Image 1 (cartoon, one colour):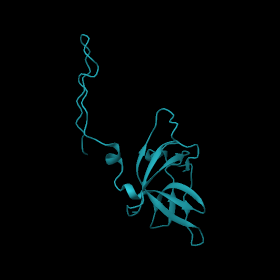
Image 2 (cartoon, rainbow, N blue to C red):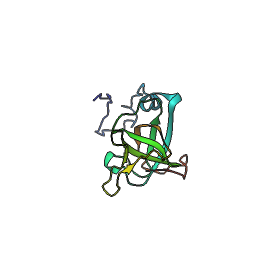
Image 3 (cartoon, rainbow, N blue to C red):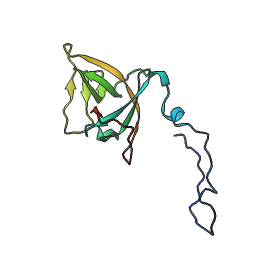
Image 4 (cartoon, helix red, strand yellow):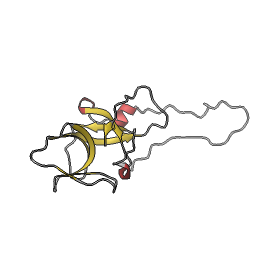
Length: 139
C-alpha cells in the first residue's frame, strides 16, 4: 500500500489561522483516479447488489475500457440492453452480485452481452451533488 504523506495538526492554541498548517499537495484527482483518460467513463451505481465489494447505491463508478478483463473483476456490461455492474466469472460465464440476495446470472450465446469496461474505482458522495444525473447505472 502506498501511503500519501499529509501533515495535519489536531491541537488548537491561541488564535492562529486554521489554515496555518495547510499544505498544498501536488496531487490531481484526475491523475489519482483515472489511468487512461481517453478510455474512461463515469457512471452512477443503483441498487444494493454490489454492497459486499463496497459499491453502494448512488456511488460513482470510474470505468476503464482500456483495462483487460480478468476473472472476478467488477465490470460494467451491456446485458440484453441494460447496463449492469457485476463481478464477472469468465470461467463459468456468469455475472455475480456481491450480495447473497441476488442469484448468479448465466451469460448464454443468445444473450446480447458486451463488457463496457472494468470498474477501477468507486467514489461515495456524502452529500447530494447537482452534477449527478437522476439516471443511475443499474447494479
